[in-house]
Image 1 (cartoon, rainbow, N blue to C red):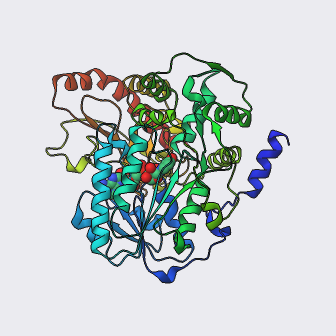
Image 2 (image 1 turned 90 degrees about the vertical axis):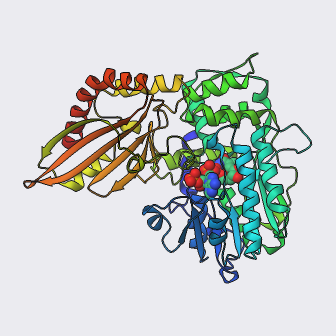
Image 3 (image 1 turned 90 degrees about the horizontal axis):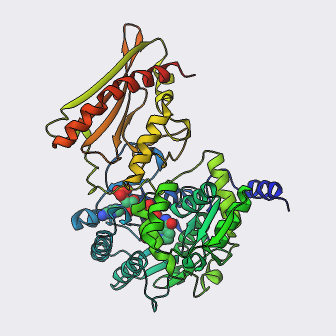
Amino acid sequence: MTRENEIADVRSRMELDQIYCRDLPTVPTPEKGPILVTGGTGYIGGRLAPELLDRGYKVRVMVRSHSPEHAERWPGAEIVVADALDVASLTAALRGIHTAYYLIHSLLLGPEEFEASDLANAKNFRRAAEKNGVARIIYLGGLGDVRTLLSPHLRSRMHVAEALGSGRIPTTVLRAAIIIGSGSASYEILQHLVRKLFIVPVPYWGRTRCQPISIRDVIKYLVGVLEKPETAGASFDIGGADILTYEEMMRVIAEVLGKKRLFVRFFVSNIKFYSYLTGLLTPVPALITRSLMEGLQNDVVCLDRRIAQLVPFRTLTFRESVIRALLREEQDAVDTRWSDAYPLAHELSTKLHELKPPPRYTAHAAMLTARNADELFHSVCRIGGTEGWFHENWMWRLRGTLDNLFMGVGTTRGRRSLSTLRVNDVIDFWRVEAMVQDRLLLLRAEMKLPGRAWLKFSIDPKNGQNRLSLTAYYDTRTFFGRLYWYVFLPFHGYIFGRLIRNIAERK
Ligand SMILES: NC(=O)c1ccc[n+]([C@@H]2O[C@H](COP(=O)([O-])OP(=O)(O)OC[C@H]3O[C@@H](n4cnc5c(N)ncnc54)[C@H](OP(=O)(O)O)[C@@H]3O)[C@@H](O)[C@H]2O)c1
């Protein structure tokens, strides 16, 4: 089959409605009672909740902070705000729950903190679930042979499984290797490396074996085990149709993309070096790539295939998973992304209205336009990503590259979707803090800065026209921070004025 025919074949088999489980062989059992999905704002939880709702379950989605868009995202679901570090809030979230999905993960806290935090969260969760008489817990963890020396990330997945399963509640553990799907960190890393490198260096761990699994199949297994009571209290390895080395995966991606790449064995194998390089070349920042890449020295293949008898369906090949992910991107239908989750404890999570006193430094640009608020807001919401910043894009990119060099998030993160925007979505080195339809878009800076910064786009009616304005807020306590502000102030004045003019003129 030619590459074009293969892509067309996968496209024709892909359900365009985003629901994966309609052909699952198991039968929905909504009568068992309410289901809790934790990690609702995360990559997996955000995709699981709609599937359960579609199958008629009464779903409660647990998030760490309230946002009005949650009700729109999961219509029919009950939204509960709780933090796994706060037992009282967890106990309330678990009240009356029959089965709880544990999809909480703290990788974004960084290598020093995530292990302890994940373990504390899991222990709290088990206790609160026991107090509420929860009948089952279902946890998605990581593959890896416990008899070998595992990376901190894989080890932490095992510890969480033990902590959840060591109590009275039957816990189903699904263990997966890397997940391939639109918006998954592993897929974006592999894909961007293949796109950007003509010569791909392959260290010895590039030949480690892995059994990747498609996001579609992960969701099917998560739902399938809920509908098979005999899976309670057991651990299952889940994987896709092939076992491949990381080099083979990149070769497959190169073929799918139609790119000729030279793969060369490389004697340098230092993980810090590769994770830094990967942070520079891909949307995923070095902080995350480091934790993920440390696991590349461990074989991650299914050690048992019992799940195939209990929840039988044809799992996708790696190649099919990649094509599906590419097609989702092409259709601008990426539902959740690795960048969605955001730790509240992060130093950059302070909201503009929470800052006391308010930021001292501001820069402002505004203009009057005859265009209506709906069109202006639509134009504002398309900034960043592949569309760029409308004017002097090279300056934004240069700032992003500098940020990447200093291990920041840079501008390569782009955005989840070109046409839609949600609170907490990333836009290059910004994160959406607040949105009011046709009125306001507030972005919080996540780039390396000697202070904290926000960009606020506002649309206000004035004298029969609309006033489009852009305000930058900056807060700093240091001399260097003030120096930074004044050095960049002339550039800001220049860029902001043109930026809003372009937004207003854009069709
Ligand atoms: N994604 C993969 O490729 C992959 C592969 C294999 C296994 N898994 C496993 O799948 C599970 C889910 O992973 P994921 O990729 O969906 O993770 P993720 O995108 O990082 O999401 C993590 C979720 O946990 C929430 N969270 C973190 N700390 C919390 C706390 N103290 N209280 C309440 N919620 C908290 C986050 O909420 P905030 O948004 O508020 O931060 C977020 O919703 C993990 O166990 C992971 O090991 C994932």
